[in-house]
Picture 1 (tube, rainbow, N blue to C red):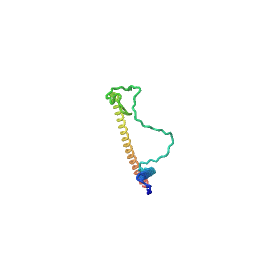
Picture 2: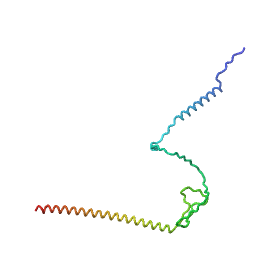
Picture 3: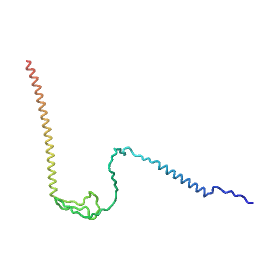
Picture 4: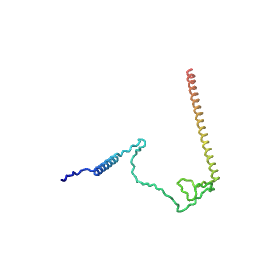
Length: 164
């Protein structure tokens, strides 16, 4: 007699596959929910609001590169001088504004000092003139007050004398 063997609908392999699919769907759903929450909080002081301006859009791309000159140029100074110190050597990398060398020119330095002295003297003369002007204004104001006082005294005296 043969017995009918009932076939199990869920075996270990099927349960593991279903659990894996459910876990995958939960992870996908969680990732999707995170992508929906696209709120970026910024402090109010860091937000700038301004009027929209229309114009050409200029795209800027920053690159790191090495620059090699095609030609070298000899720079001549109109006033002349001697090289006092060299800051960079041949082939060294430099950026805009990096000093390459220092030129010493005693004649230019003395003329600069003389012009600076002249400017300082002119500033001092202007200060002295301003102080003199203020002093003259004070003296004239004092004189004006004395004259007005003398006028009041004289007019009072005239009124008294004219009534007598």
